[in-house]
Length: 290
View 1 (cartoon, rainbow, N blue to C red):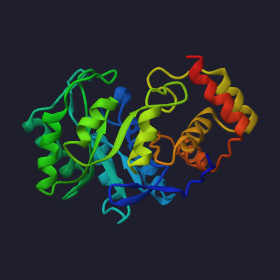
View 2: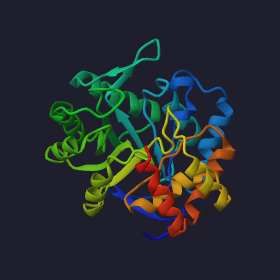
View 3: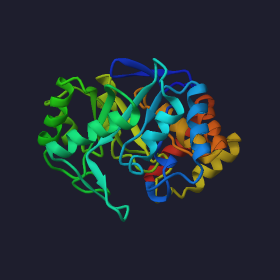
View 4: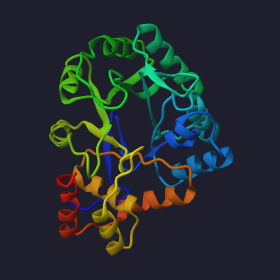
């Protein structure tokens, strides 16, 4: 594996995007529900991300709901020609902030139109189908019915490309038999490496892999090894975790999220962080200890 910098890129659909992107989830309120605590800061973070060269933003209309997409439109519309906005559908939010599946043809079609309206777009660059058989971890089951709906919407010209989120390797294989899949978005990090084989398979076929929760998500990764490596390198644990992911495979695209300008700058700086081979070996052992 070779070291990368922030300028390195990979193909997402028909576009080349920087491998360090931005995830908008944290711009919504606590529990990804309701408005941001600081709307002006949320807008400033989005604008600085794009000004810093980010051209891949991940969002969803069920963040809020309807919060992050409207913020993105307020902050960035009209969009730069090279900006790729990736959204996801397949879930809805209850009034109590709960998450539940929304897989019917009517629900998926409505979700696409909601995303188009709230983002101010005529066509969505990439739409990930978020599988919700179990909201907490990927669960086997056929995805043919909802994915066929997305394929129909793509033929109608409302979607350019289709991705999958929260899926098993078997579901990825099934999906690729139904429609062209340009990206897979799953949980993957130093400690959670169930997708190692899938990442390598997708890399061989030129398909992007977009890991979420680089530090464990709602249950943060507790690792003294990560902290020690970060200290030795004069970096933050998040920067080391991101740099490790960039080293892991060339098709990995990162979407770290934050509502802080300082953290945004730290995350983007991870693209230039050099991880010596002996530190990589230390970090690789984290998965063995979990």
